[in-house]
Length: 307
Image (cartoon, rainbow, N blue to C red; front, side, top):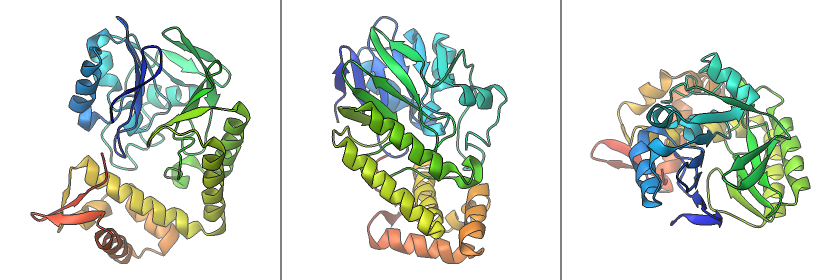
């Protein structure tokens, strides 16, 4: 998908599941909102170069939260440009104290590097992206440092992972806490009150059916609250695909052993499925293969999910 100019010289770049969508304000001193996953930095740089933006000219990065698919290239770009980086106060604390557990990186065995946060953002702040002013909306739930950005003039919402069109992101209650689902509900109500005209999410295409998207998210949260095993099953499915994308496929004879070495897989299966490690792995992989989401290719398991 070609970049979309959502405001003058401010472009939305849609990526996939591994790499979060991101934004670039094109100018002699560019501003970036989110920087995708570090493993695909070459593709990120190629897309920005195609817009006439050079990473070494970057003036500011705004990070919507500290998960690896949103901050992956922060250090790389900051090292090249010396740019400022802004993130929510809670995320700044995580980064300043090198807390790779709260950021999910260690828990999910993800690649990411710490960087220098130069500005802390809080609910109700405003921040300029070139000439365009956005209000900072604190939206915890999926991430305790999550924010959305709202342009009041044009009713444009950069929702990050607080609102998707047809689903909600992974809910990692072992890190975010047992109240995370309730905080996500509160964040959805804050978003509803904004009256956004169009939403540019952290993953997926832009959408205008804001009320429908909120209703779908609320329905999914209620499903989770009624049946906690659904949280665990979705988490295993999502992160298994994420793992295949991070490694660009994985030896089919070694993937289960790899998952067993991570914190997240063993803990998730223990928490929701009584420690049935192999059974859950076989169940999820059989489902993926039957639906064509995962296939075996030259001895590797690969996924057709867009990275």
